[in-house]
Amino acid sequence: MQSLAGSVDDYRLALRAWLAEHSDELTAPHAADRREHIANGLALTSTLWQAGWKRVGWPAVLGGLGGGPRHRATYYDELCRAGVEIPDTDLSIEVIGPAMLDHAPDMAAAYLPRLLAGEEVWAQAFSEPEAGSDLASLRTRGVIRGDEVVVDGQKVWTSHGQFAARLLTLVRTGTADSRHRGITALLIDTDTPGITRRPLIFASGLDEMCETFFDNVCVPVDRMIGPPDHGWSVAMLMLQYERGMYAAQRQAWLGLRFRQLLSYLGKVGINEVVEAAIGSAWLQLQTVRARAIETVGRLDAGDAVGPEASPDKVLLARAEQSIFELARLAERSGFAFDDTAEDWRAGWWYSRATSIFGGAGEIQRSIVADKVLQLPKDSDGSR
Ligand SMILES: Cc1cc2nc3c(=O)[nH]c(=O)nc-3n(C[C@H](O)[C@H](O)[C@H](O)COP(=O)(O)OP(=O)(O)OC[C@H]3O[C@@H](n4cnc5c(N)ncnc54)[C@H](O)[C@@H]3O)c2cc1C
Image (cartoon, rainbow, N blue to C red; front, side, top):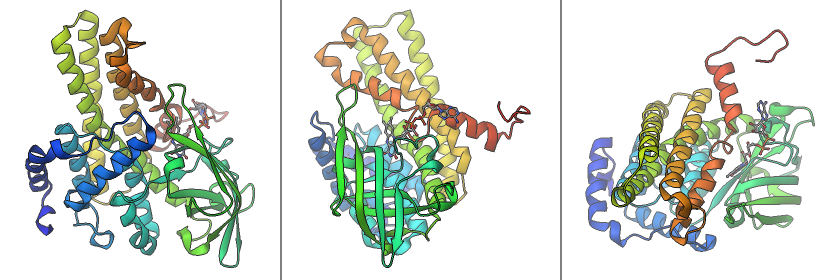
C-alpha cells in the first residue's frame, strides 16, 4: 500500500489504471432514498479506503499514506474521469478534516479515521436561524462547568445532520456581544442526551439537511477543538477548505455531468441556443477548474488562503448554474415533468443553492472587495 503515495502524477496514473479495471465493481452512490444514498456513499468510501486510494493525501497519524490536498484533488478528478460519483460525505471530510487536524491533532487521531474510512457521517453545524451570513452573531450557548460544556440553542441548515454521528458545532462561550472573540468549536456526538434533530425537506423534495435543538446537552471539555473562545479561527480554516477545496472537488463532478450532457446532446442534436449555452458552460467550468488548481496548490504548500478562497466559490456557483441551465435548455419542455429528466431537474434545483451555502454570493463578493482587493468604501461605510 505504501507505494500508492508518491508524486501526484504517479498517483494519478496508478489510480487511473486501477479504476479502469475496477470502476464497474464499485457501489454507485446515487439512490432516490436519501438513507440509501448516504449508505452507498459510505460503502464506496470504505472500499476506496481499504484499497488504499483514499488514504493518499492524509497523514499516517490518521491511517493515511502521506501527500496532501493535491493528491486529494487528484483522487476526486480521477473518480469523476472514470464516471464514479463522489460521495456527498466527502464534503465534510474536506471541510472538517484539515481544521481538526490543525487545531486538535489528538482528537483528530482518535476520531477522524472513522470519518475518512466511511464508517461514520459527520456534519458541520454552524448556521442558526438568526446567524447565517452574520455567523459571528450566533447565540447557541456553551457554558463551561467543570469538565463539561453545557450547550443550549438551535442550529439549522445542517447538511446530512440527520444522518451524522457527530457534529462540528460552534457555540458562544463568551459574552452575548463578544461576536467572533467568544466562540468555541466542539465535536458533539449526536446520541448525547438533550439533542433533537428534525429533517428539513427542500422545495425539490430532497431531505438533505436538518435543524438541531440542544437542550442542556453536556459535552466533555476534551471535545473542544482548540482552546475556549478560539472557535473563530477553526471556522475560518474550515471555510477556506469549504470554498477552495470544495470547489476543486465539485468542479471534478461538474466535469462528469458536463460530459454526460454532451454525450446526450450528441444523440438528440442541438439548436443555436443550446450551442451558445454549451460554450458558456464550458468556459465557466474551465475557469473554476483553473482557479481550483491554483488554490489547491497553495493549500498543498501550506499557504493560508483565507479570503482568497472566496472567488473559487463564486466561480463554482456560476459553473454549476450554467451546466444545469444547459440541461434545462437541452431537455426543453420535458425538463419540468419527464421522469427521465428527474436527476437533471434535481441538479438544477440544487445548483440554485450553490450561491448560498458556504457563504452567499453577496458575502463572497464583499470579502473579495474588502479583504482581497481592499477597495475603498464610501464615507458612510457603504460601497
Ligand atoms: C444547500 C445548503 C446547505 C447548507 N449546509 C450547511 C451546513 O452544512 N452547515 C451550516 O452551518 N450551514 C449550512 N447552510 C446554511 C448557509 O451557510 C446559509 O444559508 C448562508 O450562510 C446564508 O445564511 P442565511 O440563510 O441565514 O441567509 P441570510 O444571512 O439571512 O442572507 C439572506 C440574503 O441576504 C444577503 N445578505 C446578508 N447579509 C448581507 C450583507 N452584509 N451584504 C450583502 N448581502 C447580504 C445574503 O447574501 C442573502 O442573499 C446551508 C445552506 C444551503 C442552502
